[in-house]
Length: 384
Image (cartoon, rainbow, N blue to C red; front, side, top):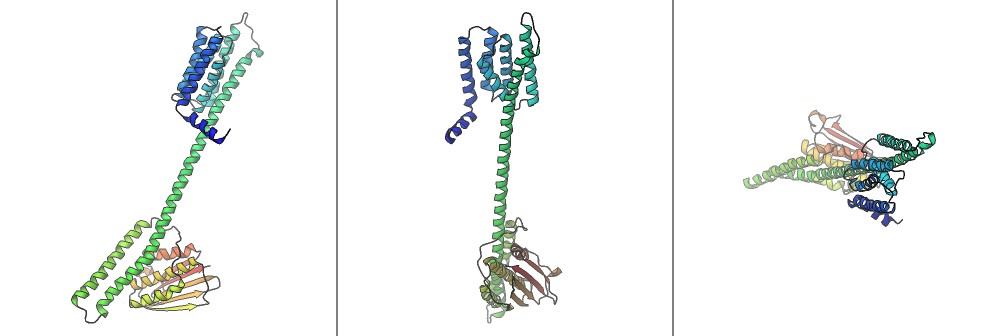
C-alpha cells in the first residue's frame, strides 16, 4: 500500500463520517443477510439489526457499544447460528469499548466472558435432553477469545495513541523551551554588546562635555551651560541604558557568544580615546604577538574597554595601566588604576558581569576587586 493511500485511509478513519458510513454499511449488510437466511425469529432479526445500527454512534457515545454487544449475544442466544453481521458488529463493539476505555479491559473481558457463558449454558439447556460436558463449552471459549482479542486490540491502539500524544506534547515543550533559551541568549548578547559599545561611547561624551567647561578658555556662560546639558543628557542616557539592559538580561548567568568585531590591534585607538578625555593610561605588552581566535581577540578587547570605562566612571583622573601578556597557551589581561576604588572593593552593575561572562565563555576566569596597592584591579586569563 502506497504512503499516499495509507494517509488518505487514516484521514478518512479519523473523519466524523467514518462511524456513520461503517455503521450504515454494516446495517445494510445485516438486512441483506437476514433476507438471504429467512429462518429466524423477530428477536434474532432485531438483535442483528440493532447490533449493527448502534455502531453508528460508537465514536460520539462509546458506551453505546455495550448495547451492540448485548444485542449480538441476545440474537445468538435466541437461535443456534451466529450471523456474520452480528459477529462483525460484536467484534467492532468490543474494540470500541477497549479503544475508548469505557471500563477496565479486565472488567470488559470478564463481563463479556460471563455473558458468553450464559449464552452457551442457555444453548445446552435448550437441547432435549440437556447434555452437559466439557466439550460443549467450546462455544464459550471461542466467544471469550474473540472478545479478549478485540478488547486488547482496542486498548493497545488507545495506549499507542496516548504515547504518541505525550511524545508530541513533550516535543512541543522541548521546542518551546529551546526557543525561549534562544531568545534569552539573544537578549543577553544584545545587552552585553549594548553595554560594551554604547555605554563606552556615551561615557566618553559625558566626560568630554564635563571637562570642556573647565579646560576651554574664554567659554561663554551660554556655551558652558550647553556643555553641562550635554553631560547631563549623557548621564541620563546611561541610566536609561542600564534600565534597558535590566529588561534584556533576563538570565544574568546565561553564557552566550557574539560575532567578533574589534581585535587587540585596535587597542591603540581605545587608549587614544581614553587619553582624549583626560584619562592617563599606559599600555604594556609582553610576549610575542600571535594570531588568536577571533573570540579571544574580541573578549580581550571588550574586557579592556569595560575596564577603562570603569576607571573614567569611578576613578576620574586616576592613572591606569593596561597589561597584555601573550603566554604559551593563554592570554593574560590586567587593568589596574591608582584611584580610591569602589566602596567594598567591588563594582556593581552589568559591566563586571559581562567581563566575567566573556572570560567564562572561553574557559577562562576573571577576578576583580581592590588592588594590593589600592585602586581597582581586573585580571583575566583567556586560554586558546
